[in-house]
Length: 408
Length: 197
Image (cartoon, rainbow over all chains, first blue to last red; front, side, top):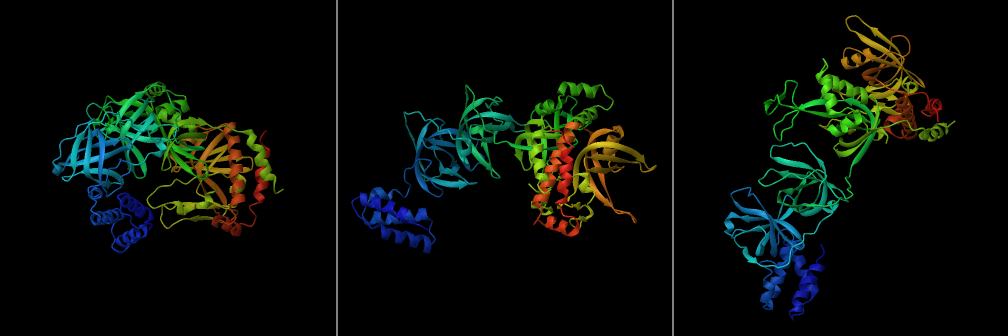
């Protein structure tokens, strides 16, 4: 491990107080603490600093004990710090041991904070600025956060300047807290009763999924609306980022942006239409939307005669080497089959085979034909947003003739 | 990409990977003899080894349905002939493929059809082995799709010829089959020559 940078920093600090110290000696001390005694580097730095501070009676420097004042993007895990920031979001406390949780922000960025119930700290108010002396930077699920404990001094301060959050391009987001300017490009069927809305946001650089949980005062985003989203929680689910918008300030914006959705494409023969394709009945209970059985039975809400019709396609594309399961929602299904939901419904209602007739009709149109599909891919499953039939391209013939004639 | 790069080992534990439908001309399929099973389970997939050097559990073909015969009394099944520019596929649909049987019932030769199915080798006590295709689905198609399939299959066959040397399946094919895979280049050329530019 290289200690020269740390040593340089300590040396400069002490020297600036009028006590020249050798960098080499500091390096040896640091190395000894870290390598021989297994002290974490940050702790070693503090120890060495304090040693000099005592030696030269430098009271100012000893304050590195409670933590240097830092901006939020400078802190590292395990550190004791002093920060000043604005409470930009408060979230429901997940446990009685926690008095408050939320997001603190300064000019450099935002960070989640946790106030322990035992801290006996004054209740933080949203929109106010505070100085936190001796807060602890901790890591939870790979994300840094600030812990306000009984040793933390919380002081309300006044700041005149407005805080302008820095917007991060989506492809540069990392777990923690982030602000983006993005467009709602997809809205997904709700998979959970507590989810108000989920889907996909995209900007010029990429796309990210989002979720908005049901909570008082929360409203759904407009599909294809452009928003400035300040201080969303960026979570990491199995290596995939997701924005939790409940903490965020959402500002609708005028205009439009060119989005990059990072979509995957796959072309091949449509080799299988899975059962459950075509016309389906969905549970009408708010937020459920499950597909009902033939007897209008929802696995959760039982018999639902007031079902809603929907069109969808589930099937397999195959290029001879690889396969993808493709899922198409109503819009894509209508486009590729040329059959509207209304037409499908009429077909089902006026035919002795009912919904099976729609399935057969979809199969007739797609099975055994070449398709090119674009959409979001998750583990070999393609959520199709755009789809078209492929046709015979005579201009490929010459090249293949040459290849096959090469050995003649 | 060649399937040889990721043979059956690609089936990771607990995940389902659908067997791709290989593109193969009747003229090549007819020459296949070697068939084997990967794994000991009853449900383990069975493969035939294509002479151009790739294993194949399923195929996709588009051709002309020229003949269809209903056979059997108790166990009804259909036997059909589907023709491509290089030869004939023998397609069967039995009571284990009720969907395919119903689809077959609606078709009248001659017609362009798309077929997804599993090839198997039948070795009669006397005479040459016969490759038939057990049909998973057979649907009405058209000339545009057929021509597209000929290009697709030509490309896939040339890819196998060019890339199979050195792969386990490629080397096995060279041992098991007398002819060099390169002889199928001629077949591809003849198939392509029938398309209009």
